[in-house]
Image 1 (cartoon, rainbow, N blue to C red):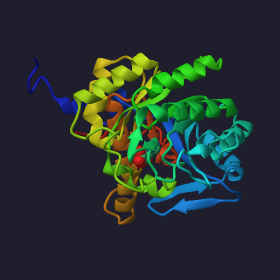
Image 2 (cartoon, protein in one colour):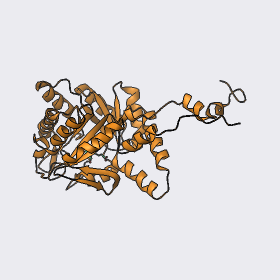
Image 3 (cartoon, rainbow, N blue to C red):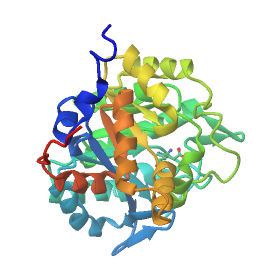
Image 4 (cartoon, rainbow, N blue to C red):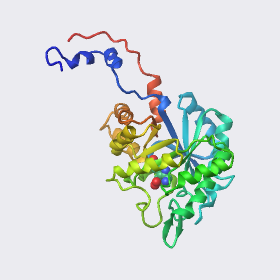
Length: 336
Ligand code: PBG
């Protein structure tokens, strides 16, 4: 190996153009998926207090937002519903006229090519706020599967391009795959939240989606944060059950998990840069403690460097705007 002074690693860092030439990872608008919170009702565009710059929209207010997203070349959105009525079985989750089903139709009318992904999970729709059905005080795995399958099917029937189960019940990918295939929808991909941890970083989301559990927590179904090998088992199981894209969530505190998944599997990997990760940056930037643009691009680049192909992020619109207005690399070569 060359050593100093033959080797000088600073040679390739001297100018913006040289740095760009040897850059190993880049974030592009085309990597990003923008989450949208859809509230049942009309004429709603309400900012979420713990997520500055992120709004809840009623379906009728989506067209303007969707036009902005497509103009920024962001390829897709993921939808979360906030229904007017919740019950024990989360029945509005699989209602043909549910809030997400309405939103899918509104988006497809405005922007037929925008990829519409739907989050498939019962927690926003159940009165108890858990991601499955409660039987004898426990979240019952097998009784939840048919409901999740119905929910996924109704999203696809409304026009969703990809369904993304996030409930962490065992066997849900298999159940959803089977339901879609039997319904003649074998061409629709599943993006599985395969390694989803029981994380404190979901706090702002639960305010936004009104989906906090009314008793207990999600530790009996979401993963225990210290575990890495278990994440590989989850991913392996979901791929075997028919997942097309697998997700690691959250992203920032789990970059090692993304890397391990990248090294062990060949399917596309998505990472969810979750609500708490967004809120931390926004809060610090507001105080003037961090440069928001620099830090956000650094975080998203780190997620790609760890091995993710796709990033779900609330920063997507800001990032796409920054990238569009990026200056060409024309600065003169400085002296050493
Ligand atoms: C639904 C779901 C959650 C998130 C995505 N889907 C919340 C949870 O599991 O409690 C979190 C997303 C975020 O924090 O941005 N189960």
